[in-house]
Length: 535
Image (cartoon, rainbow, N blue to C red):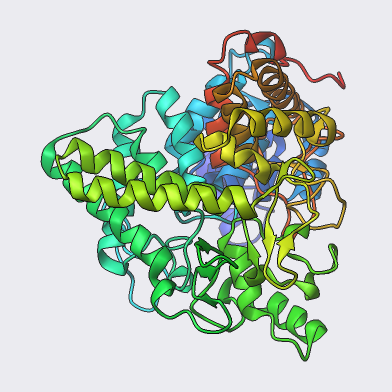
């Protein structure tokens, strides 16, 4: 037998008989693997995107997940939705896959989903890379998500509300330490943690952030007080350079000589982060220069809104530096009152008296210029016309939010909110459609929180409950259908909001924060939608 096999081998070697195919184990295994379809084979670009974005700490997690639909349908959805970034990919996976052993009924609740997002949105201390636009951050922080991979000023307050509800106090204090660090380095809190944001700030929420901290000791309290005083000095720096125009930097002299604030930017050039868009708007507005107005609108956080537009609808007519906003001045009053309280707590009576007086003067100016006695409503003031604007927006709720409104003003504001700003899905931003993202029909988490908190403060709990319930229903229904939390919502139809300079973003820090905090509100549970209404 051995001889026969040897003879056959020799004959084959000499080419006298055909050689039998040689079995290659490696080739066979590869063929079997491809026929079975590994996750990488089946989901190709989706699989690579998820794994390379580190959506899960362990790469095996996604490799073992079970699809909720046919692979072809999932890949069609992937190509259509084109989720970008870790947060968007995580939401896509949650919608289209489940872990082995899970069922659709065991899908994470919205509350669980928000809690699971904090580690995804959290970032370690940021070191400076030469040539990068990033600003150094010495402590951990949370980003908003989507295109916003840096820390933003006013966003962070609303994100912190959710962190507080979920017991993430160390992260709140860490973010606070970053803001204080930036004030110590730059003299103010920049719009965001990029070099191109250093020429402006955002709505001054730092004092309110400090109210969320449980950490207190004399040295830290003095450091934080110094930061608040520096922030106040930044916003009021223009008071020393006022000329015949009646405005300098962030400061506006009102007709009676009192001083209020406006949004403003130290630079007068297209924004780095929206360069092409600003060049186009500037060309449409020519010969009137609008770069500083575009930047001021960005500092407001409402970029952009009919509040800043001369004709109420066209971005090229923006004149944000002419507007004395009711929300900004409400926050400035709160800042002055907060400084006074902190000075009192540290035994500095002179400081307390000084800032109490400044707050009183501002409150009187707000009552005189930013409250329309004729229309019984709060309003922005237009320097170019020397009268209140006609715009009705959610900004009217800020005086209630900080507690400077009188009971009569609060009554009138609640009635106007119910009549013109209440929407099926929450709170309208304004009452006009312009295609700008800070106009109807969009609703935003920060404004919803301001409204609910302000109405609660003045005993308008029925309206506050209605706003909170409608918002939670909108957000939870959208999450139940898509697995996503987004930056803004269309409060007329319950879908993701639209308009603005970029597609709607997933994540999303302030939506997560406000919604998570509202989930602890008594009676809110009935408003949470657990299953997609569309089936």
